[in-house]
Length: 177
Picture 1 (tube, rainbow, N blue to C red):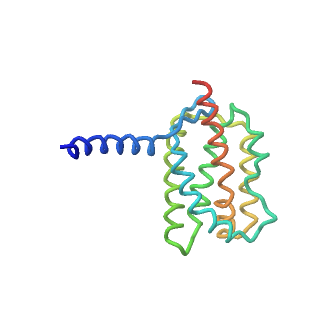
Picture 2 (tube, helix red, strand yellow):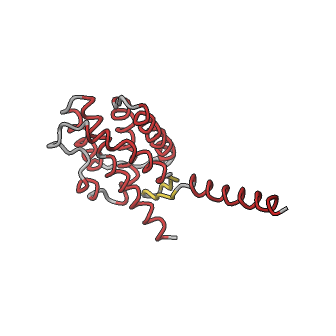
Picture 3 (tube, one colour):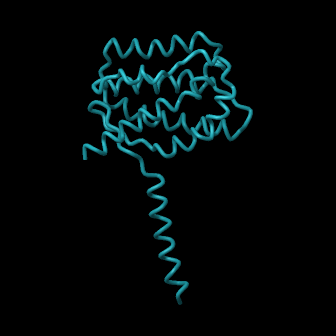
């Protein structure tokens, strides 16, 4: 009898845990509100990063400088992240290759997460100022100076900068509530 009462309670606790695990965080970029599954992105990134870093031979080159991102104004955050996600989806992830299938699966999961965010942002119709476009162009220019495979590994290895920035935007959204 006790077992019958215990099983539904366990099931309800499991459902609660599952819903928290798949729950996203609200990220506000200018006037665009996006639900981002930060935990999933960070989990996949932590499984991918060691492989990307070990394959990075151009240590003197920095694609995603944190000071560069810190200069992005709040009114340009939507545009900036849309352009950065586009860069990752169209240039980085398609050129990243790993011999370890788990790493490749992790990169695919991050790419799918980025595509989902990008599709939501696309509906927002972000306005891009020239300075923001130049900032992203400088990232792409650094990327283009390297061999494609090497550049893709470097970009994936530096993805923590983008994830930290998204996390900071989600924290700002939480403090606004």
